[in-house]
Image (cartoon, rainbow, N blue to C red; front, top):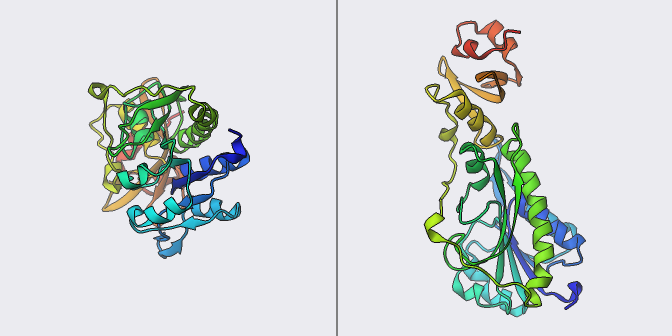
Length: 291
């Protein structure tokens, strides 16, 4: 089957999905339909904003559906007669009624080496746990979260100073490359899906803003990993005189935590020494580079 004959419906929402959608289009595998979450208010001014996937789909003039619940789009999806569904970071579990539509099933691009780090925050969790390696998995979607059989995986090393944002961007590109290699082999019957080992499964949580509060009783290594894992969201912070101080950048030096950049509440980012000039009594003084 030629690439340009594949009838794909793409389902995704944030930047991770938008990267994969763009790479599909560039590989002559442009979907016939894109489904994404409804436009939502963003930022302090709560401006109604389209998802990155919607913006990408419109740039390629692909029809877009934005159901509040995806089950409401089952009939419309069926009318497009897709041979394959591709899911990348959507935000809703797909019901059986939709999973049963395409002849070749529904493939998900997941940014971890499943069954490890199922769930909503696999990238942050890998950094937080001090993993040396992570990767991407292409799997067949079933009705359980990140549970379906695996078609392909590719591993990558996590950089010593790599933030969640940097790793996210790399895994999105890697995931797209593996997906594009996998689709023709899957359609041609050259891949045998293998079941995940449920006994080895680990689960991640939805990140909330409060998770970014630093516990200074933790080791320097754990705190440094937290600062990288939660960059950019939910961010890490300390409290000083009732105000939130964001910790933007830190490193380890001979086992000691060195904080480099901070952002006091309501102010611009600055280096730690600059902050301490106006706040010499801050507990952050113990983490300044004295060289």
